[in-house]
Amino acid sequence: MEISSTEAIRKKIISDAEDKSKELIEQARKKAEEILNAAKKRAEEMKKTELDQVKKHVEDSSKQDIAEKKVGYHRRLQTFKSQIIDGVFDKAKEELQRYVNRPDYRETLKNLIIESAVALGGGKLSIRLNETDKKKMSRVTLKKLSAVINEKTSTTTEAVLDESTARTIGGAIVYAVNQQASTDNTLEARLERIKEDSKAELEAILFK
Amino acid sequence: VKLPKDFSDILNDLKILKNAEEEAKKIVETADFEAEKTIRDAEEQAASVVSEIETEVRKAARDLREEADVNITSEVENLEKEFVQDVKEMKDRASEKMDEAVSYVINRVLEIEVQKRVS
Image (cartoon, rainbow over all chains, first blue to last red; front, side, top):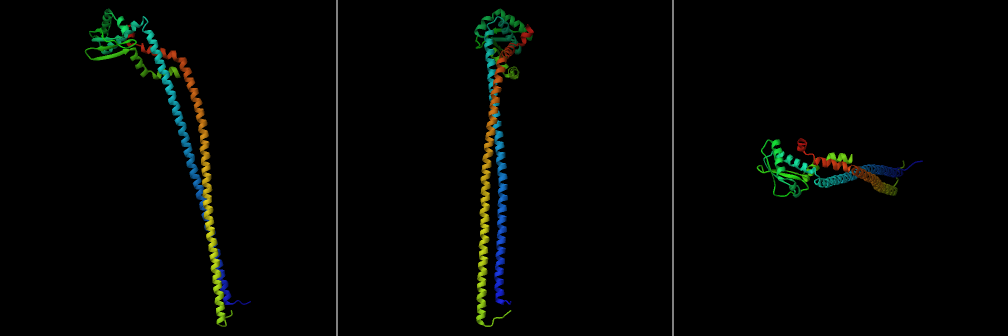
């Protein structure tokens, strides 16, 4: 069967259009597939990144919360320990208040004075005591004390009672009159000094 | 191949070709429209995929936080129990050793250097 040239051209036009159409649709299908794949890939990457970030944030935050709690508990524990140690010193002070009424305190008082006087190097000394202890310190006792200090420091020593009264449960504040120096050897001052440097020993006794 | 015999045949042929051109144009336009729609649909689907994943991520993040909260609460409760126990043990021990500690302090207070040499 013969085909007219017009019909052939017509068929070619339609055929070209159909080919073009197929090509357009195929290109679109490929592009659509690319778009979808890219979106899926991007979404999966975003999911991984965001979840990793959230996991890290949650982990960091949890660790920090726990660490803060631990620090808080440690601080509270230290506060309790300090309170207990303060309690030890309160009790010790009560014991010392009873001790100063015992006869053997008299010897302790003398030794506290000697210790301070030796530290100051002897010489002209003024000894400040509380009202009760003043009564225990006769002129004779002071002379004897001066002699002991003299012997220990190899310095001529004259110890006299200070006119002022110390506000203390016991012990003495000794002034070196010529040197304008003094040592506080009251029982409270000694307690304070011990409090400073016996923390480790007391913690070992009380908490270990 | 037959050649057109007269002018009317030529006109007829031209008409046929013009119609074919129009038909071809329509075919391409339809395909173009369909291609654009395919891409638009893909873009919508892509947006939907991203949106679904975003929702999934938000839910997973919320779950992670909730799980972490539960773990922290449990760990804090354990720490609190340990702390309460530690405090109790510490207080019990300190109470037992209080007299020893007080004696230690008193001895230190009365530990006078000269006293040793004098006595």
